[in-house]
Image 1 (cartoon, rainbow, N blue to C red):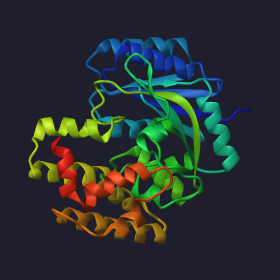
Image 2 (cartoon, helix red, strand yellow; image 1 turned 30 degrees about the vertical axis):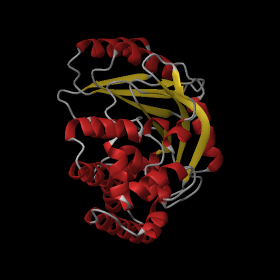
Image 3 (cartoon, rainbow, N blue to C red; image 1 turned 90 degrees about the vertical axis):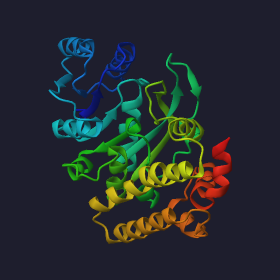
Image 4 (cartoon, helix red, strand yellow; image 1 turned 60 degrees about the vertical axis):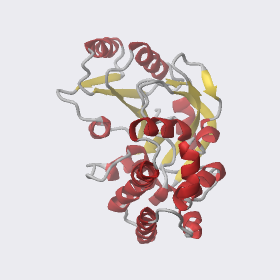
Length: 326
């Protein structure tokens, strides 16, 4: 008998066209022993809930929950993790398009490599489903990890909608602590501490970028443009971006989250040193020469282009500011 795979999907005021295409793409997977567990986060657009109820009636593999109040996407995913019972679990965004072999290929890889997590590549698609970037790994410099790597402690390894992981990872994830800022980063960290990770470089879904994406899927340049419109072009505004958005939000907060869940002494020591490195960075306003520390904590396969940008932002903020002003 085939193993059951739980697919966890959160929704909130989703565009109906996107929602229908995503659900259909999941239900039409070549691997059919799936359970699609959906939690709507109290959408004000009640058409979203009506569409979901219709799907639940038409397909017994769907289980729908409608929240009485807005939980936020992290707590909503925690809610779904608590509802999951399968040995294998996947996260799903509400507006992507899964290719028909995504579940099958992910489960096959996970079993072949005997790991706790696999993550796959994607095509970046626009609002109309047109491919705008044919290789998400290359476009976003996603780390390539097979086995175990310290990169899983200091960076996220694959976006949540690209992942399949085991029940043992879920058990260690919940309940979420207050430090949880990214459920997908937490998955990769726990998997790395246990049986490890495997990467699927084949593109198994279309990852949608549209106007409601605040930061996800966008380039550094696009995020900077948004920040400047809100905060201005002064050096003070740039340092605020560097410290609060880049160092804190994208790195330090993730390491603090992982430290809360760490069980391995080696991981704990690495994270403690990593956290001290970030704190020292934030104190430097013009230049910081601890580049060897950067390479120790944040370098890895498929990251060369990203590393160059990060070294400028972290260690030579004056140079970064010149580009920031443009």
